[in-house]
Image 1 (cartoon, rainbow, N blue to C red):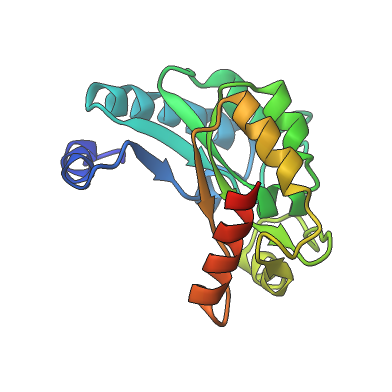
Image 2 (spheres, rainbow, N blue to C red; image 1 turned 90 degrees about the vertical axis):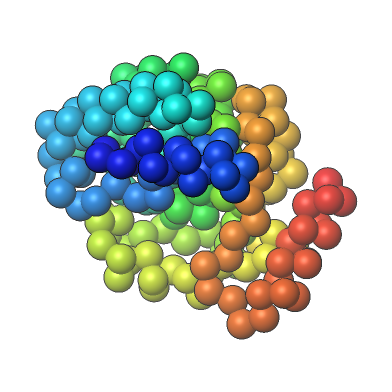
Length: 194
């Protein structure tokens, strides 16, 4: 995204994509508050360039950056210091809740910033065992993911708040699943029923 956005835009237009999404912030960009500040500058530059290319740039959260670091919450800094005209966000419900954040509260606090949501559900409410900084902590939570209709998250209320906040796209996602076709159909049928 930093060096070949023009090529990425060409491919995105060819297949009909509207968004280019950064799916994770590399570890070297999230160790300190200064790292996050640099990331914010990079996001604004990528977002501006994406807009010029006829695309939207978005950042997808995981569990890191949701708690105070040096007195600030990094993901809130990203939201509050990126240009809404050029930078959007994609909320991952499972990782947001595992990070200890109420997804509805943030949708209400930041209307218009979240444009996409990864709809995932939890078998039971769980949180990360540590600072959410390494993949081992994510992988140990994979068994807690379930189809949209079987979990403990109040998806009906979350989706209602998301629509009110300006979310345009909802993606069913379950990182690890034995029968993807069955799980996907169950989740989609449930969400259509809402």
